[in-house]
Image (cartoon, rainbow, N blue to C red):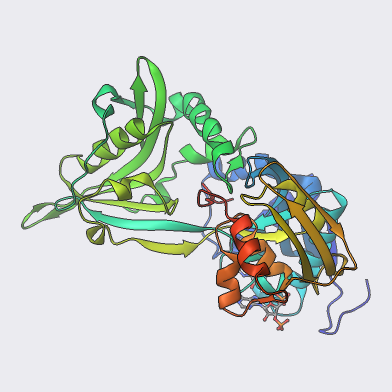
Length: 416
Ligand SMILES: CC(=O)SCCNC(=O)CCNC(=O)[C@H](O)C(C)(C)COP(=O)(O)OP(=O)(O)OC[C@H]1O[C@@H](n2cnc3c(N)ncnc32)[C@H](O)[C@@H]1OP(=O)(O)O
């Protein structure tokens, strides 16, 4: 390859099986260099999709890594779209800020297009990295620290019919996965899990416990059927005033309101604890509507899933719209110029078409804003109010923003 402006000739190539150890060591070092347990390393090896992963090589040395998992993502309307789950991105600190990430993003987005996947998605180690490549933050997740000495839950009818029982996390993986799988179509942003991914949820390296217990699990059952599960840890604390342990919720899923409430009631009530910490939850997590005092739950939000339309037309056609929409977008996409220009989107709750057009634009925006709004969690009107989206035809932004809503806030249930 010809040398680039910063003096490097990046040799970007598809990952080979026998390069994985070097490649993965580069990645681990890029994230600080703390080694993973043998079990965790083996799991990531088995999850690596070699033909969808790339490395940058400087002679024999691996200096850049990136992968793209083949996921299916739920989009508004319930369709399950093949997407590239961008992951494992790193550049050796000896080679940073010389364009290697840019070279990998170029190669990867060209590949994703060739694979026919209309979206690339990722979670970012730092939010400032990916906007320049057309990724927009499309979902947020909820973190909370609930003072369970003061906050009470009022549970819905039927909660007492749900039995909560302990189980060994690894022994009940299949029933937990079955609960998870039933929830995937109901919420945009959720990922259908490929075989093997469920094991990530029960990896329990001691190095990540920070003084808390090994992973614990309870099942919620009704009439012998599993209707939910929770995975959590307990971190004990003994203070002069008494026990003040914390329950750290790692994962919770339930098929109906009573099962959900039964699990939260259990977690709120564990003896010798005075706090429940949750993170990575949906912004509308139901317990918030059951508590006596939201303020003492100290909720906060964090950016989560970034979405990058790789094929604007195919992406906009794949979802539905909660109100009829007929709009011409003027899209600007400097990094993937095949998306730039005008697109007419016509659709409603049943389906949509999106085609190139020579008609005048109604709404002008960059592909990054389109990615942010795509799952229905970030209103186009709000992006308009921020000056990130421009209304060309009067009234078009409000109409389009309404149509783009998803009814339920999108949520990414786990990182990757
Ligand atoms: C999906 C995931 O896997 S997220 C994980 C991302 N990886 C990490 O955070 C690991 C540690 N960090 C790294 O490995 C590297 O710093 C990377 C991958 C973030 C960046 O790699 P580099 O090769 O240095 O990026 P590159 O030189 O192509 O930079 C391109 C542009 O992005 C900017 N940029 C790169 N990293 C950052 C950052 N962390 N914050 C803000 N801007 C950044 C550069 O300044 C440059 O801007 P310019 O074009 O205006 O000069």
